[in-house]
Image (cartoon, rainbow, N blue to C red; front, side, top):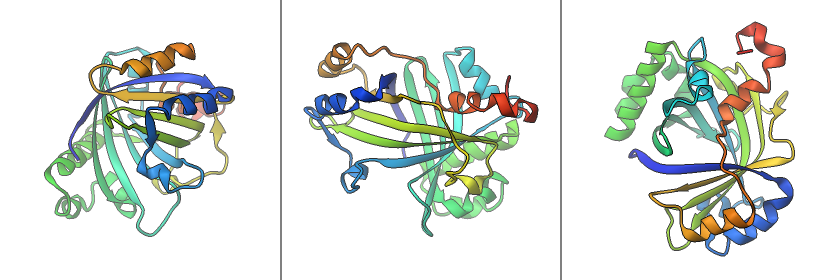
Length: 248
């Protein structure tokens, strides 16, 4: 998959605004294919974020670095024998997001994190995915990256009708679990939710935000915020897990 460069704005919105926001956006958008065939019109996103032993990526975000990155392993919905994992590197340059990802069989994820079987996966992937995967594994070894938190949520995704590069997502019931093993990516027990009475609205686009999107943002008095599901997923557990190496 090629590198994706786009802008990404995030907002907290109250749950009672969800229906009205959806109605407004659907005047210009439609549900993306991953939602259209599902009764709930959403899908589950499951990500294990990795970081250095001293939480380098976490503190880069807290310190507000304009150029920073995060690495995660992501899958979707529920487990099946053919489940896929995406090894993702997401870099931020001010307001611009660059994402690289490689698709591999989920069962291979633990081996890859340990540096095993990489040559076998490389034989089955295209150049761009191979480059992303090799970079991910290189950084894992160089920085001694380890799984820090599992973040899971339900996502309703919309695509622009006239311009499908415009994407809007509603992320609900965002929850986390600390220090997961890679085989716990489908875990649901003992999770802590950190969105409470809100959901996370993300607006993604290239170049300029369309006028009609800006109008919706103004009409609902939404305020752009710096929101990190990874950092929130860490912080919701610090009261209990600081003695295990979580930031205080």
